[in-house]
Image 1 (spheres, rainbow, N blue to C red):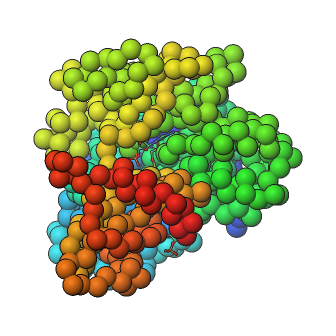
Image 2 (image 1 turned 180 degrees about the vertical axis):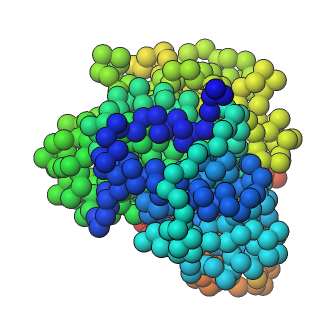
Length: 514
Ligand code: MLC
Ligand code: AMP
């Protein structure tokens, strides 16, 4: 018999023998592993009936619900390539993704149906379904009459399972192509490394349109046959209620900052927790220390990206080493990490350089961008992460990695990536603007906040409030600058390049930005 590398098949191999066990629990409803199998089968039948070629894309921009997760699993089962989109993306942003990826199917919130249908008609006639935050919509309506068993299609290890768009330094987003094997190998490694078992209860509050919430968190729980407490978003009141019944939580640093800001978050609330995991952005040492003092738990920080899923992790088992603030731990089993100079030559332990990686988890390239893909891999097959880091250092074991900065002009705000170029291009189109620079400044809640520095044309007046309002109609809310400062001229070096470091120093006190 031909073996099947389909990721769903892999995840289902970890489902508990007793399929009546609860897999997903929301404040209102619960779903067993049987329900997961049946509902994903019904959605898969709807998708299969469209008779689109194996490997067609399905673009999904919907609110978080258990059904949205079932839809993801159904896409895997039907052999489609899943393309999740942040619900914050505006029409113009979505248009780019849909034009680039040419999905055969689009699933959106009912509130966006008209726009999405028009977009589908303009870009190639994808079939459009709706799915709302309650799991209702035309997709579910069609699924209800479908059979509850589905033969998951056979996938090869290299077949694409998902495309995740990550913003590009040129302002143009790139679709990172992830295969079934990329995802299943990483899930397998994390399962063992973080000690998952079917007794675990994962507090799942992350969005499910990025690596962190969709792959790392959901795969871990499903493959372990564990239970997920499924909240639509970070909600501290709901989290405080759910934590005593949970064993694992994952979040971006803002989640931990917000928990600590609440005096009700105590050691007792965490009494059944075995693991808090942080990633997607740097966790401040202050947060790590305060958290340990308050709860007795050392947050486990790990490092990854859309192109690679998870790369490194602080140890789970104490005997394997300490969890150190400011480091992202060791390369995961099977993953290799090297720190190199500008010539791709490895630098000594303790020296800072470019972080390059390889392993079965590393993507195969960017969707329809062969040149960009070539640029991002070295001749000997290592992927250039764009992060700056070092191994070892004072008081740090030689094989621990620390991320010390970025070679790419990227802002990470509350765990979401913002590429300044994309925002600058839109600001420069605004009336009265001569030029602009977008920077990230320290922010107590989001880690970094987006700030724009704008130079008006001679004699022109720029109104920051009006500009923010205009930007909000074109950009996802998290990309809209929290502050827009108007100045006469941008600082430049002798080569004429804008000195963003100077701007960052000047405006770093904008941490009051809301
Ligand atoms: C929301 N807002 C943000 C923001 N999120 N501003 C900056 N950065 C963010 N991340 C703004 C909104 O525009 C709005 O402003 C105001 O904050 C309130 O919006 P909200 O929707 O109520 O915010 P909230 O629900 O509190 O969301 C904040 C958050 C959320 C931190 C909980 O952003 C979040 O869940 N982030 C997680 C991101 C994530 O999953 N990243 C993983 C990427 S994968 P206004 O002005 O409109 O009112 C990856 C790889 C890896 O990086 O290694 O994991
Ligand atoms: P994304 O493109 O959204 O997948 O974001 C990936 C980027 O997030 C990485 O290249 C890093 O810059 C950053 N990142 C992820 N985890 C961490 C971490 N623990 N510490 C610092 N940066 C991180």
